[in-house]
Length: 135
Image (cartoon, rainbow, N blue to C red):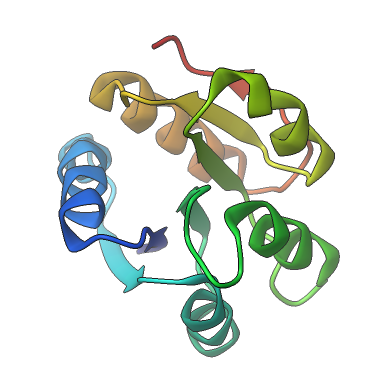
């Protein structure tokens, strides 16, 4: 079973991410969804549950999505693939700088997000920004 941590400030955003990523479940992989409304909670959930994938919206506060991604990638115990949902396309360089495995622009294409998540879960490793979903 794969654990996917969804990090977004608004419940509606987390629901939309969950709906998109349920396609990973439908493809044959069993998925447990974990949720956090901010970066501090996300770090606590990651330390407790060790997710296999994290999907983070950049706008989470008080601990931003880029900082959260950087800290997850820097920790050998917590490092896992991270998909960063960008609010602005011009922030792509920040996503690459913080070590995101993949970047997705808003509005999120649910099919592209599910495909990317499935690929990262299968690879089972955290590298650097290796993909960008079409928006």
